[in-house]
Amino acid sequence: MSSRLDNANPIIYQSQEEREILPEDEDDNIEDKVDSREVFDLIRCINDPEHPLTLEELNVVENDRVHVNNEENRVQVEFTPTIPHCSMATLIGLSIRVKLLRSLPSRFKVDVVITPGSHASEDAVNKQLADKERVAAALENSHLLEVVNQCLSKRKNG
Image (cartoon, rainbow, N blue to C red):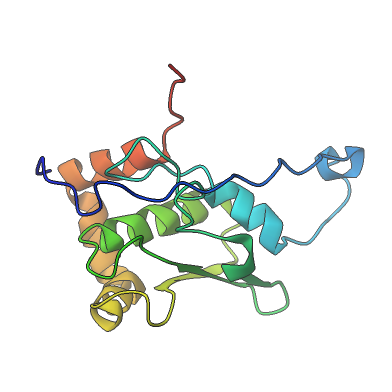
């Protein structure tokens, strides 16, 4: 990674409050549907590859841009890079995709796309993120997998 940041001074947004966990949420005997807030909670804490901030703090991911269709077993996440020429957009999308593939039931088809009009290379990045072979090949690259895993790891405070 280069020492030059794409967006050296990003705007930091207020995080949403944690969702209250109810007893029925933890009861394995109750089948509950996956909802957009549950998916958002999975991706909100992903670390930005350039800053010691989460994707939620940078407003890259928002609950309103997460769509779940349980009947069709589909999840779609739109993410918004902080600048139109963000060189990390593909890595961010890959991190979101990997987190959801690791966390959601395997019945779900996961689509991760850039919010329309928010990136100069939107079509190219979306094409890369939708290509299963390219995603699989990227995850076979040990350096890239290490970077993705760093984005997915919990940051230590302090």
